[in-house]
Length: 112
Image 1 (spheres, rainbow, N blue to C red):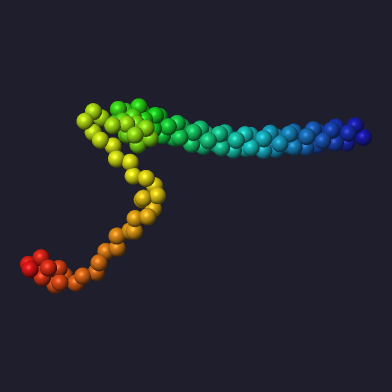
Image 2: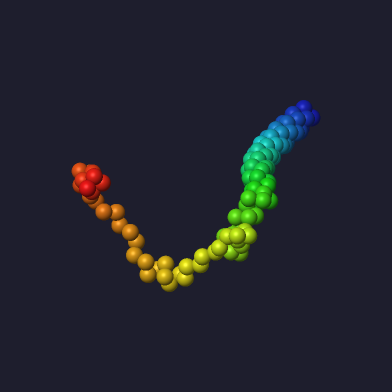
């Protein structure tokens, strides 16, 4: 009877260790996936950071600053004149449509 209890105890302990090992393995696999996902997110953010650094460098150039001052603040250099066309005048102007003239007619018009 003593051997049966020892065997049963060994089997129960063995099953316990197998279950614990399987659970630990599953936990490690899940942690590995989290690390992989986190690394992908870090790579994505690093690329976005690099893009933002390039954009920041671009907006600090004198050419960009001058362009923004001209476009948004109507800034002009000394000796230049600014012309402002009212939006209603722009809206009233018909769009130019290309006239389809055959090439031979264009040549005749050019010569005569």
